[in-house]
Length: 156
Figure 1: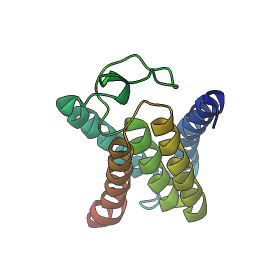
Figure 2 (figure 1 turned 180 degrees about the horizontal axis):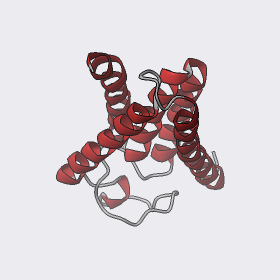
Figure 3 (figure 1 turned 45 degrees about the vertical axis):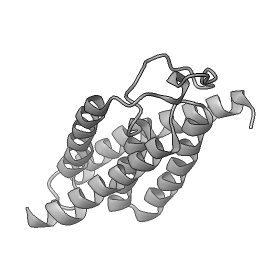
Figure 4 (figure 1 turned 180 degrees about the vertical axis):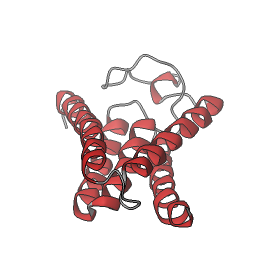
């Protein structure tokens, strides 16, 4: 795939999901604010708390990015910040959002999960992540969503 296509794919998928999530929150705030399940507060807190924890974890590890390795080519996707490659926060985010959407509407949640696989591929092909970074981001995102909505929430 051409470099321009990878850049566009990465940008469009990232922006689409990051736009979709606030729209989901607005929908839940308007139509399900007082409902326990599905509800606005869990849809805000599960991804939000998980994002903060993943960000702290990732900054402690501070793994190098592929383009920082000796002899590496410059990344296709513009990125100049060093480190913080593991786990991929883009991929974590799309998958925790996919589980959040799945919790409310299963079919669109699965579609976002598929988009997450495509985004993961673009992040690796674009040279800003190793495969392990995106795999870990996906698994952590799915795990945080499942634990938040299907384990912790029912106990509250």
